[in-house]
Image 1 (cartoon, rainbow, N blue to C red):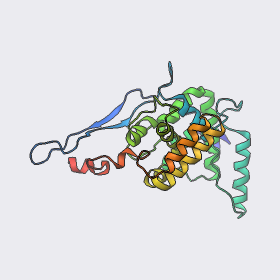
Image 2: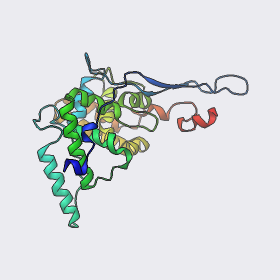
Image 3: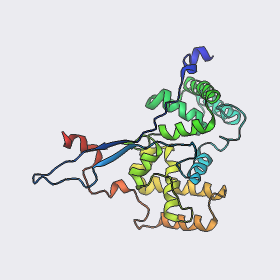
Image 4: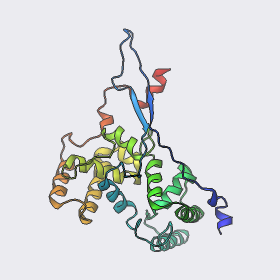
Length: 268
């Protein structure tokens, strides 16, 4: 099965890039004055885990609670037996024409493989799932779980202009996820949003006021249930997210400069 579905699985390697990647440019108006106040865009800011993580532990705990709760505790390599069987049953029911609730139960390893191997071409077919399972197992035997989690966080495409969670957070909220005050409702809301963003990034960014905030509330509920935040902070954060003030909003929509999608054309 391995040779048939994923003959190159043993060749998969995690590429480590440890340097920040930025794009810098200055656009001048007819008087020679800078047109943009913010002319440096962070495209990639690497997550590190050695000697310590440079992203806050509360964010890591929340991300795993949302995406893969058994990541550090399961004994199987790269996959969850329970979730794999559930996915197989769902695929069989789908083939038989039954109505199936969409499952999002892939492990961190499988999600990393999906990004590395399929990119935007993943069709979620049975053969794709088999490839992800085989490759995820091979990766988990080759790398430890800290290395795999680091690679996953560095590979995430959460906005069109960035790669990796730190650069995305800088673009969306102006912080790099390294320091989070778990007693500050605004920072907790931002972190909850970032932890849940991977499920459907384009939807939660473009429709921030509705879908993005609903996703944030879902993640906050998980954080409370897992006792990652206190009940008091949960209630304060929920109230802030639901309020109509601009305390919880995306930085990119308030930025007074040339929209990033047009900057390369204006530069030319």
